[in-house]
View 1 (spheres, rainbow, N blue to C red):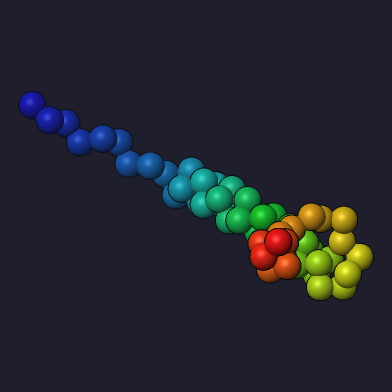
View 2: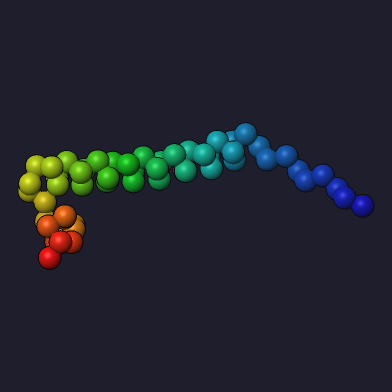
Length: 55
């Protein structure tokens, strides 16, 4: 016979969500920083351009 699982507490749920949101915020900050660096021209990041694809 099937038995219902125990309910997850709100604190566990909130902690899990906070961790997920924090990871997302860190990745968003990295992406924004990289984008700003590329646009400013001071980037050491190598990325493909249209000119590279043609030749």
